[in-house]
Image (cartoon, rainbow, N blue to C red; front, side, top):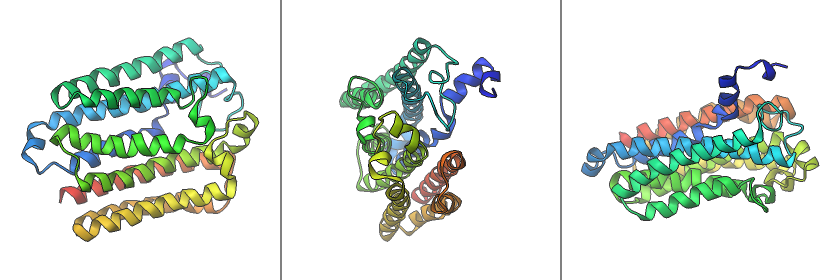
Length: 295
């Protein structure tokens, strides 16, 4: 009933899943921080701003696309997590599909500006990103239903988004930005993993074989912990070359409450706060790591 009382704007905002947006912000600020000291970075700082718009538009587009595709497939008929526009029957599927296309369109337009400024090869990257976003749960054989969602998130919201932001600003991909992208990718995956852990019961019924469904509850929780451990390990590795980067490890402290809840065996609705906690840890770690890179 609470969802049905939301305003039209409130519904669309909720459908965009704001808690997932740190996954779009972090790679850009980290990638930009890897090159801010360079002259080219100063001259083309605005490409970093455009990259942020592209990343946010892609994330929102993916969220609406997933809402549409899962909704029309009936996967979201029973859901304990955040509001689903189509699955709940609050918004017509066609409207959500149009919203997804508009978001992808915004990403395409701003991405094209970057590509025309930096390199036309970025058009290929952009097309691949949009296609991957749509085919995650859309199309005849959505790879998100095959347990490959984490691969998409790690590659596109980790490696590609981080190194792509570095490249957009400086015309190069550095070893530092590549290593930092692994940190970002792990944290982005953690966000998806906790979402899929919560949905194991309903996804199993809907035959949505996410990685969490395939691995099972216990192994998925271990995987969640492992992603934070891998992010910490990579920050420590970066710290050997530049000790100031170790500041990024401080941001991971914010993940402790989420890790405690997951280790306690929380399920269903009790995992909803963990999604917000994970997003907060992702954002704080990204900011701390960016400050370390700048220093």
